Image (tube, rainbow, N blue to C red; front, side, top):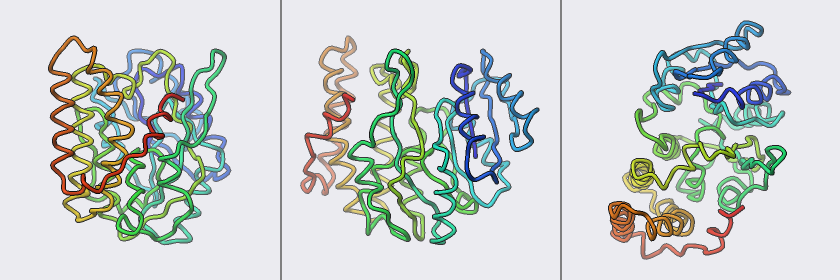
Length: 306
């Protein structure tokens, strides 16, 4: 497992504990401290000192999540690899279920469901599997492709998947940008001989109460630009691979879930460049031939409020 983190000392113990609690004990983890200014490096160092399954790597200066993951990718020497962000948590059976699935199927990777974990005033509590995640992962499919299962393209995160290590030869994350996993996810779908999907919720994705998660910063113009670049890039990967049904599925989901909150922000944003960026992106979506076939589900945007 690759576990990157920067300035997450309050959360990383839970992430490491979730690894220690795995029912599958044959794991190793590369911990990448990305130039933290808090105690994250110390937590990582203590884990590595007490358990030889952990290995610590440090960046002297922050380089971003993509660079942290790439640093660890170069060091992987296990037959399988996966990612766990240092402020998230695995379910106890996650690795057993994911690796067991690949051992049965022979596929290149397996993608599973996940849930959000929100602060309820007392603790971080997991919610339900959201409908777009279910559409991507339920029911279980072994040995499928993006052409047979286009809705798999909705699962764009790095950390709900386990891959065969050799599948990552020639793959890496964009560096210096946010939302670095979206294009990589679509490349995984289009390059795979076959992949699996399973409905098990293997990760609790923490939405931090202080709003400091990258995904909670879309009102900032630079973050918006990275976000739209990632969405554009993911669609382009699917389009160039000839995965027309997957392009339609992505446009449907983006129109239902991504565009409405961006338009809401744009309506009150002090910088007119924000609205201009959103409008240009929507115009680009309309230019795709698959746009005419897209029928977004309005109920999906309501799910964002959970």
